[in-house]
Image 1: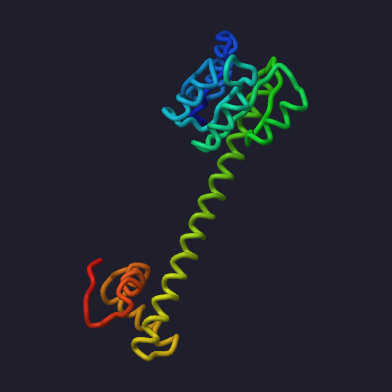
Image 2: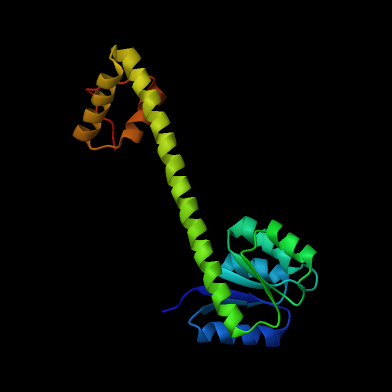
Length: 199
């Protein structure tokens, strides 16, 4: 079973071959490869790898610029490879949302742990983003229910607790979710509890 799908981007075919070999031997699947920044963006969109190994110095579009576009467009983590350890490259890499930085020549002892850490960090970020989205959805749902409850309190002359219980009972009896009922009430600005709305 594959430990992850990785795309390799380097303008030197021998280096790409070496990297692919090291990754394959370590149990990773090679999702795609590219030799330019432009092609890397196309391949990232097409194959959606779990991680991209990207060389910094490439003709036309460099790896940092390509990484910035990939991270922004597809949210795919990038591990940069470079023959240089210049400070400006490191600063640019930070701004591009790079998850790691390796100076060439890269050995298997350096590559595999860096890949494992990059993938683990990426999964952690994805989980956090998923949790944040769920929380935002819950907050939005709560707002809808509160608004619908306010309408019911006003139109049926009920207190807060009674209005909520009426909404809850209706949902349980008609097997619909509270959010759906809340949206219906907000749209119509009132509600007749004897009417059945479709789920």
